[in-house]
Amino acid sequence: MPSQRPSTKTISNKTKSAAVVDYAAPESTGSEPVAPPDSQVLLSKLLAILEEKAPEAVPLLNQLITALRPNPKDIVESEKRSRSIVISGMPETGRELTASQRQAHTELSVIKMLDALDIEAKPVEIYRMGTLTD
Image (cartoon, rainbow, N blue to C red; front, top):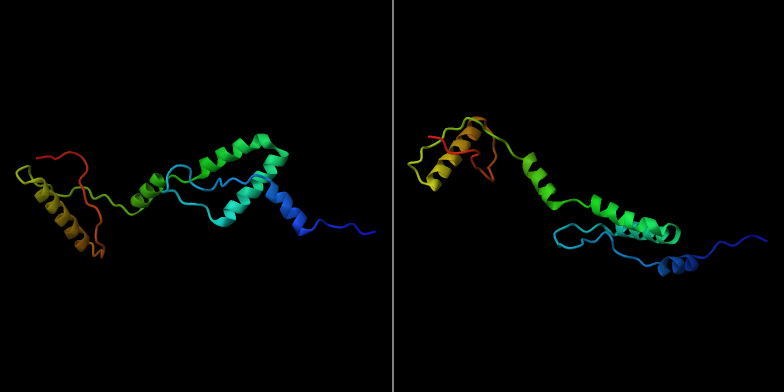
């Protein structure tokens, strides 16, 4: 007599009996990205298997998920760094000008430098590094 495979209904009932926790969702802040539904299903299946066969590994899974979750600050900083340039030797104005006039002079100097290099881009941020020298 041929053996029978368990039906889909039997398998789905076994899967539903395991406690499914959404480990892919952000914990505290709403600024972190949520994993796609496929990732959540995969994590749920992995959690169900671990709860059944190796419950001591569930905390390790939680630690792994936390370690692999991207840090939004690191993402923003790496994006800014990849688009940034540093120009050394730009002329400075003296202290006799106001802060806004010094900033306008710096911005004009950067724009002139970009024009000389024939770069068609508008700077998003321009600021000086270091201390003001006379």
